[in-house]
Amino acid sequence: MCFKPFLEGGIAAIIAGALTHPLDLIKVRMQLQGEHSVSLDQNPNPNLVLDHNILPVKPYRPVFALDSLIGSISLLPSSIHAPSSSTRSVMTPFAVGAHIVKTEGPAALFSGVSATILRQMLYSATRMGIYDFLKRRWTDRLTGNFPLVTKITAGLIAGAVGSVVGNPADVAMVRMQADGSLPLNRRRNYKSVVDALERIARQEGVSSLWRGSWLTVNRAMIVTASQLATYDHVKEILVAGGRGTPGGIGTNVAASFAAGIVAAVASNPIDVVKTRMMNADKENDGGPLDCAVKMVAEEGPMALYKGLVPTATRQGPFTMILFLTLEQVRGLLKDVKF
Image (cartoon, rainbow, N blue to C red; front, top):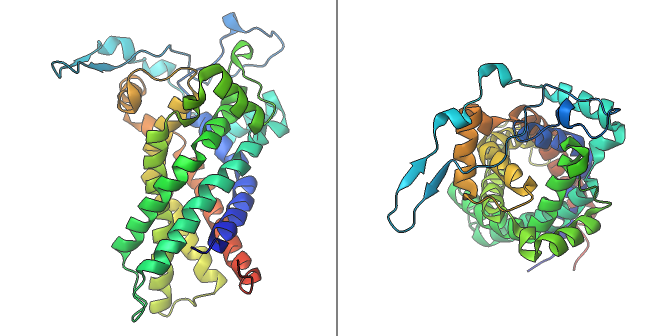
């Protein structure tokens, strides 16, 4: 196996991830709306400006419990979960970003960027390297044909492996990005991604670094399959239709933008559940399905698409920067063999 695609993908992903980190942080904060906030009565710092548009904290309570012996499902009364419409408030990505800058300072938009860089080194480098390897192996050498179904299969495999490798950094990234939205007495105040990984492992156990890994694997499979397969397929369609050239920047921009939108829409529901579970201090007793049902019961079905706008806004630029940088890195390293 050639390791150059892993290096190329890692370099491109680190650049794209670092540049779009503020958008990713805003997405995480929006996904966590409805999970926690600070009230004036509980504010440990009277000088802290609070935003009452953030939904109130509710302690985690399983929405349903599956009895493994009899296989029955019991639902808690809906009155426990359904907040009145007056308590619900939607913040736009711009409002969330402005709130972060106002209350935490401009530097807070890059909270957890060290974890993002580590995550891209592990997750993206692995998934893009494996996808490239499978693409080379599964492309018909006579016709050069690489069918869409095969592209998706390669993306699913690459995403699954990459997510397992990168899950610890993903947990650290979510924790560091969400920290500023917690009450002061609950903030973790990680100094760096290394500090976050060390403290999580020491305080909660090494296995907690793979918290939400089932969701991460599924999300990564969806994102990688939709993102890389869409990029390759749209490029082929544009070139075959005479509306682009294989190395043309216009072709790459159009294909990467389409890939980003498809990936954002496909992955957002599972991304929201993953964010909620990773941010929890203790393992969610009901599991990811219970977490999703709880969200829908308490916050409505559209809770699964919280943060969709910043997700799409971030996925578009991220994917374009990723693939445009990747093409440039490939050009620079085309004569390098290792």
